[in-house]
Image 1 (cartoon, rainbow, N blue to C red):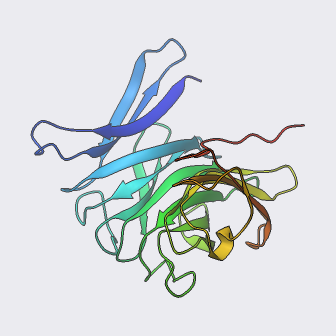
Image 2: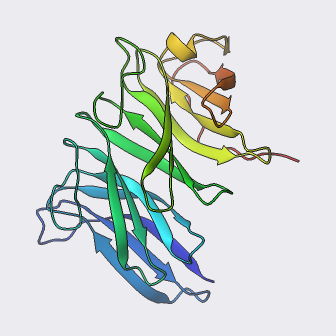
Image 3: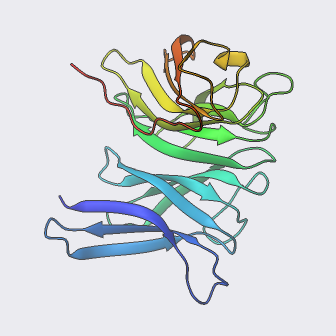
Length: 232
């Protein structure tokens, strides 16, 4: 029992460059352990979830190439980290291309794998171009229990697209919410309201990456959806 949470810490002896930080409390709020992970450049953890073996998986980004980080593809990679129940690093994986790539959430799937949702700003390596001229795309990826890439899908348009949360539905399909500035590609769809700078969206896909529906909602300026729950 208890609580686990993650984020960034800025050591005073590290030139104000952040490390990924994870803390575990017991049910009374007393700290059991904490760990900082990263390299000589910036890291951050955006999400943490328990894993079936009693450990935890963390999703964030890294700009490093050393210490706890290995395999950075270029600059700012999505960084997945697996730790034990006591916070010991078990494995880490970098995913990305030559641009800035960040995961915003990690979702345990019922088959024992995990789903991450990212924004990928550059093509190459793990992030192929969604369509000519498109960038800043949404990337939904399934990872195996050892962190290897199982499958991945791209969604987006020619402008900036960002997922905030993806959930697995009871029937196995996925629902993603976030925001977009695109009006073409996958986001060439009707908008509920008048188009703003950023439109909030909800997208339902199957496990093969086929879009079942995609809806955009907006007020008059910048709007985003941050969380979604399946109702019964």
